[in-house]
Amino acid sequence: MLKDITIDQYFPGKSIVHRLDARFKIIITMIFIVMIFAADTIWSLMTGIAFMLLSYALTALKPSLMVKSLKPVVPVLVITAVLNMFFFEGEEIFRFAFISITDEGVKNAVFMLLRVVSLIVGSSVLTYTTSPVELTGAMEKLLSPLKIFKFPVHELAMMMTISLRFIPTLIEETEKIISAQKARGADFENGSLKERAAAIVPVLVPLFISAFRRAEELALAMECRCYRGGEGRTRMKQLKTGPADIASLVVSFFFLAAVFFIDRKMK
Image 1 (tube, one colour):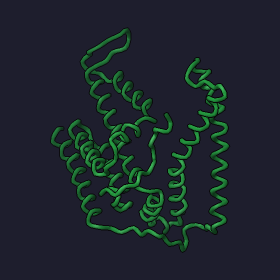
Image 2 (image 1 turned 180 degrees about the horizontal axis):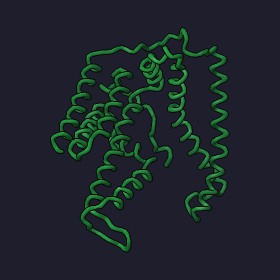
Image 3 (image 1 turned 90 degrees about the vertical axis):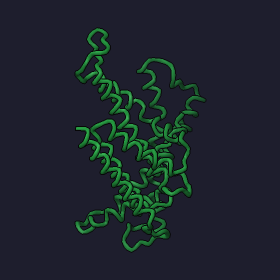
Image 4 (image 1 turned 45 degrees about the vertical axis):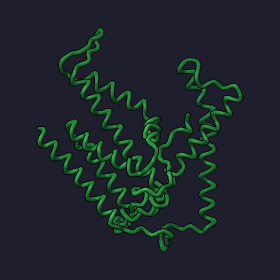
């Protein structure tokens, strides 16, 4: 069900990760992404996964959210695994007609699958534990040096945050439209691929209309509140750096160094 999709949702809490400075959480997420992409061996990748599991455990969120965060990308995971399984040379372990599966193909398929899953789950920790308001402030602070070049930092941060904020809303709206269409006799589960694709049109049209209407209402609300950008604006919640933020950043660099060290030793 679409309502089970948790992508880019915020879950309030009082865990260690929830209380971290949003700026540090964004930086740590970037370090984690570098960590996962830099891993060339299974052991270095496992080090990155251990960091991801540790971070998720400290959020005190339900483990089931990890599974829900992967639901939207299951087709991507399957395609990634299949492509890596069939297109690597090595010792053949199975053949059917012209299709050959090798041991290297299986290893690469598992490796890439673990990498993609880790990236999705690890990146979800940021949005699960950080409110859209905090994300806006953190991104604006981190990108503030670009103001020297007349870059619209505040506007960019605002657009990114609004986009993240409305993903759960659009998912909920899609669920309502699908339920309404089913009540009118629409069938989204049976029939050929062409018929299923045609059945999506009655969902997409009202969804786009609803999205444009919400965007217009939001723009009108911001204008009524005399919103004129970030110049001279203040914030109720100020970002403050604490010992836990520094410690988490140090631990992140330690795991990153461990990934490079393991890769160097394994080669």
